[in-house]
Amino acid sequence: MMSKHLDSILSSVPPATANSVIQPLPPQIQERVEEQTERIVAVVPKQVKEEIRRYIKNNHGATEKIVLLRALKGMGFNIKDEWLIDKRSIR
Image (tube, rainbow, N blue to C red; front, side, top):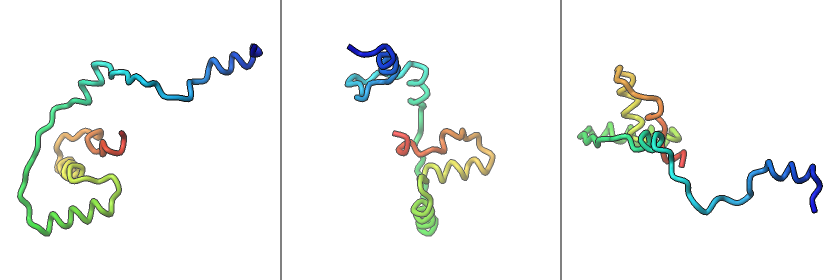
């Protein structure tokens, strides 16, 4: 039999183990996650590709996609800040 004080403390603490059942995302979040995308294929000079590789190597979290989107944003394109985050880092 636990004391009332200990019982009240333990009832407010989340369980130490993860749920074995994964809860589905609410529909409004699921729609945002599944935003439609298109693939761009561009032929660039080898020197530019090598510079992009060096930039990515020296800047943690940068990807070719993020480099391209930042450049487009700098040119005035409507680029959302959430698109400039490497999704692999938040999984």
